[in-house]
Image 1 (cartoon, helix red, strand yellow):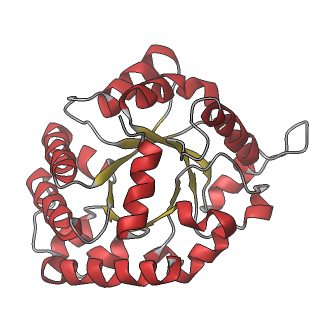
Image 2 (cartoon, rainbow, N blue to C red; image 1 turned 90 degrees about the vertical axis):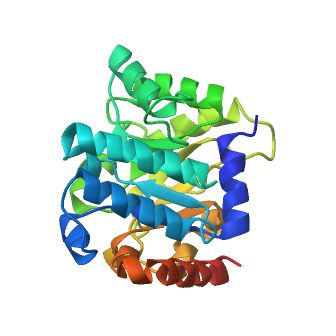
Length: 278
């Protein structure tokens, strides 16, 4: 079984860093001529998957934009997740789940169990109840070649106080999260492999300000903040030696091209990222 880290590594080397977010905002649905409904979100998601397939290696549906339509929205999300995986894309469910005990077991089963209705290749997870609380997700992911992206240093200003708070040893909360996940990764991979437990680190984050420094072993970095939020392909260099590991997530800046322009927009933007990455 190929590990999730190695799958991401192959996708980035083959298709480049761009990850297309699937975010059916109400305004975007209207621009696309679709209803703000579960059916509209489904059609939107499937069209984005179609445009992404063959142009990029990774897509990231934002779960909230489907959940808001209730059971119909969840059914639509199931179809989009399945279509993305059937197209050979690495599908990251941006669900930011995090809890303790059997609740985390259930979240993990929902997103990471093969054959589950909401099966994805990876899920985003919130560690602020303690990194150890995510152990059920880590265990299930590793058992099935799935991935977990742990929130470590996000770029929204509201996150700065809790994430950059200093602990007794002087490290930041963000740095401690990275260290704990890296410790687990190091114990479970073969030398030279990419680990399957990665991190969410914003594209506009200044690493020293967040208390971050280069880490090992290598692991994927999901980087929101590209596109409409201000960062561009040239900002891949902000990640220094970790630039080859970065998944650059863009959504509205590409999706606003509309149903007729989405294919060209994805292809053009993907090529810009590939040129920078080299």
